[in-house]
Length: 436
Image (tube, rainbow, N blue to C red; front, side, top):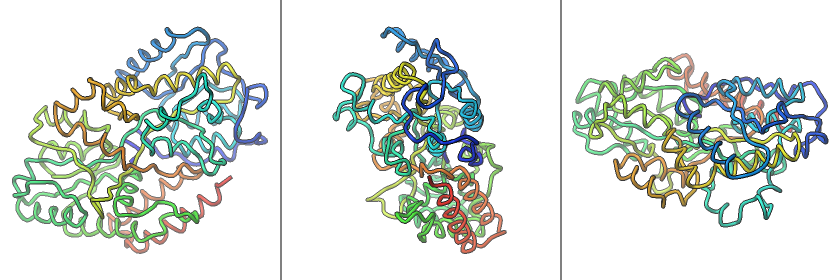
């Protein structure tokens, strides 16, 4: 799952009807793009309510400590709305200073020449980041912002990050005589069977989401895309589909309606023992559990090899548009400011996302949060082995294929073998066709 807020949108940006001007725009006059607002570096975001207030507090602190073009936040809808709005703005050649976006969206924006390559700014001795500062970021959160299909350049920077974790209901586990959540996939299936036998309950409420399935695939030991560019080419996606079919056939798991969060309610009401969700769901699940921290827990998702764990990393980044030197410099300086350990921790504690810097672990605010309950630290520790999804053009379309394939398996419409084979063939074709 990219997280509960992410939606599927069709890959369309590569069809934008104007001549591509290259991947690494300099200034607005050179690339042909102009700012929508000359008085500020506008950032398009999807944050509302509490998160919007917090983001504006960070923006105000940034604007207060410098002289020059200020940053201004504008709500632009959900991520699908932002994707469509940016695509239309590229056609109109009038853009904000920056936006939040997922990697595959950024790839498509960058293929039009609208996105500023950040490598020179990152290396700049005045406004860049030192080697020690770069080393302070978790590797995965930087890796996902370097685009092999665009010459290996950095076209975005970490903004809000989360990882896939397993939430478990301690009351149901205790009722089944289970003391600890499973560490391997084999143990997971065995515990699901024990729960059914001892309690008569379903063990797992399935919410079908591409990123969740990608996390399962990674934890099975597989890779989403091979070095040759083939998608889901190994046996691991078949193993994921076979496990899901087994769980459903044995009435150990059931499918919940998409985008409804019914799995969270089922967990809180002691109807199931396990759900898999983004770490950003920790706070709302805690509210459903009514503050009873003995009733539930958070764990690393089951693994093929617990000694070499893997999970999926997701969440949006920020990309800067090539609309002039002042806009680019201000936008980059804000992104750098936002990533400071103290701001990263403030954002994390206020939103449920994760700090992206290793040194955040030394800040007293984060230490106090972890000391409240052991489950609070689990997602942060996952950052050391979390892996991003592909940052390739066409990935948005592939996400839809993954979810259709999984739903076919769970509902019995498709066999795991047919679903895995067809998914690999179609996904590979889409990614190769969309490659620049």
